[in-house]
Structure formats: structure tokens, C-alpha cells
Amino acid sequence: MAGNSTRPVFLNLLHIHLPVMGVLSIIHRLTGVLLFAAIPVVIYLLALSLAGSAEFSCLLEFFDHDLVHVFMIFFIWGLAHHFFAGLRYFMIDLDIGVNRKQGRLSAWVVFALGFITMLIGVFTLL
Amino acid sequence: MSRRVSGLRAWLLQRLSAVYMAIFLLYFFIVLAMGSVNHYAAWRDWLLQPVMSVAVMIFFAALLLHAWVGMRDILIDYIKPVMIRLSLMSLVVIMLVAMGFWVLRIMLVAA
Image (cartoon, rainbow over all chains, first blue to last red; front, top):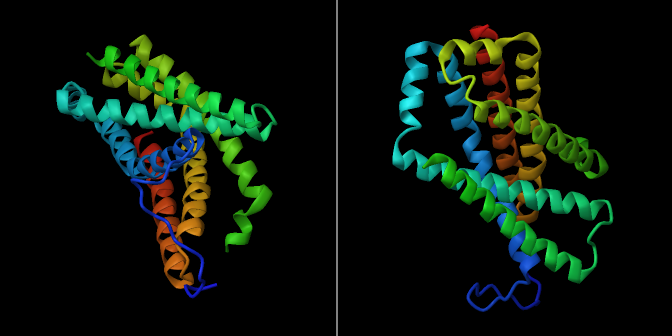
């Protein structure tokens, strides 16, 4: 396998034009990795929340900060996007929305749902 | 090692864990939104009550398994050199196992 094939390599991100489902797919992966990185943070917050009433109050104050709200909104956006994109893949597994037109439409729907969820998050936190 | 979590098994694991997490999170966010657990005593009682406590631990088990399948797919797709891929996979496994035991410790020590 190695690196001695003569196949052309084209990795200029500025010129690659992925169809919308392709963009969705890579964002699904990216959000997955980011969520993975967030797991220890989530667990730590869980630990803090159960540690004592002083720690719990500290946590509530922490969640009141604007900067934390920004992170939370990105987290919600990432989670929502990953979830809805995953749901789309699950449906494709069940043979729903497999053809290209449906695939393109459902990809746009996923983007919309993720964005709307993010907006709901923004309104809830503000 | 990878053959244990490959193919149909991995696919099933990923979907089942996703379904469980979705249902759990829906319930979790609804309770949060109702505002009934916004002080320490209520929060603690809710999470450490037997059924919920087990549900939380299962949630994290599902999360870690789901994450493992996903991360494994990514490593297989992008890391060609076998030794580097193996090392990174081992790292991910150790992290996931550590997270799992950390959650167990938290839920069992707090109870």
C-alpha cells in the first residue's frame, strides 16, 4: 500500500467542492471528535456538582458567566449537529432518504435543525 | 483487538448506544428545564436515587462505547502507519476506560 502509488493527489481545500452531504459528513466527524474531547470536562462537572452544596453553588455561578455561555452555545450546536446528522445516517441505514436528491435535502434539513437548536440554546441562556 | 468491535457489531453498538443516549438526554434536559433540580439537595437526590444512578452509569457506558466506535473509524480512515495507529488506538482506549472508572467512582462515592 505505502506511498509509492502514482495516483494524483488533490488536497487544495480552497478548490475542493464537496457536495453538501460531504460537508455534513466531515462536520459530523469533527463534532464527534470535539464531543469526545469534552467528555472529561462533562465528567468533571458532574463530580463537582455532587461534591457538596458549596461546589454546587460555585457551579451555578460558573454557568452564569457570559464566556461560559459562549462555550455552552458552541457545545449545544456541536451536539445538536452531531445528533441530527447521526439521525440522518440512521434513517439512511433504514433505507430512508438514500437517493441523491433526498440525501441533499436531508443534509440541508440537518444544518437547519442544528442551527435552530443553537438559536433555542441562545434564547434559553440569555 | 479491533476485530471485536468491527463490522456489524460496531454498527449495532453505535446505533444502540445512540438511541439510549438520545432517550436519556431528552429526559435529562426536560427535568433540567423544569427547574426542579436547581439546588444541591434536589440535584443530589435525583441523580443518586437507585434507578437514576444506574441510568446515568449506563449513559456513560453508552457514551464511551459510542465514542470508541467513532474514534476507531477516524483512526482507521486517516492513520495509515500501523504502529502509530495502534498507539493512538491504545491511547484512546485507555482514556475511555479511565473515564468509565472515573464515572463509576463519582457515582459510587457520592451515594
